[in-house]
Structure formats: C-alpha cells, structure tokens
Length: 109
Image 1 (tube, helix red, strand yellow):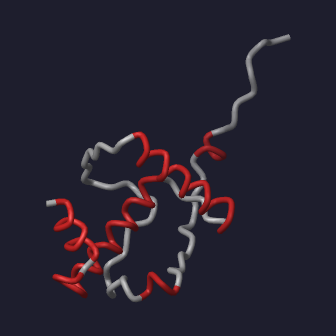
Image 2: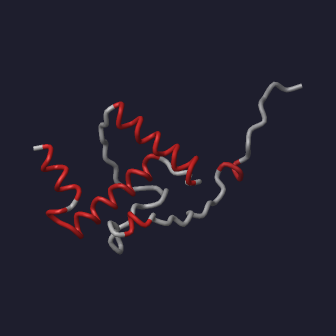
Image 3: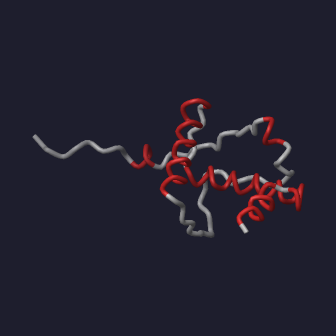
C-alpha cells in the first residue's frame, strides 16, 4: 500500500475558464466612462507595489468577502483594486476639478 496522496491531474488544475460578466450597480454607472473598465483576471504585463495600512487591508478583505457572500461575486483583491482605479479615473475624466479624487487629494494637503 502506498502512502502517496492522490493529487488532481493537470487537466483539473489548468482547465479553461470563461470570464464572468460584471454589471455595475446604478450608482456606479454615472462614474464609469465608456472604455474605462478594470481588467478581468488575466496575466498582466505591468506591476506596481502599493503599501496600505492594516486597517485598509482589513477593509479591502472585508469588502471582498461581502462581494462574495452578499452579491455572489468571487473576485480577488487585485481585481477589486483595478475596478476601483477604473471608477476613480472615469470620475476624474468626467468631472475634473469636481471629481472625488481631486476633492480628496486637496483635502489631504
């Protein structure tokens, strides 16, 4: 008798998946400009490092779990951050000086 565990095969580990359609809630539709979307889960060619506080990381993880539990959306933190960036940049494009980003950054000065 062998003591080796039974592991899944390559077909099970590397199966093709199709991207899920995402629908923006009504309050986000106004902030998203055409063509400005976060990218779905895929291999990205560029990387940045962002440092966050423990509280910010905990809030991000809580939001991820809320998306999964309350809304049935299983997304990773990277996808959430890319979508948040897309929303903020679309708002900046649309509202300029009155955008949430400009107002928040000015408040920090």
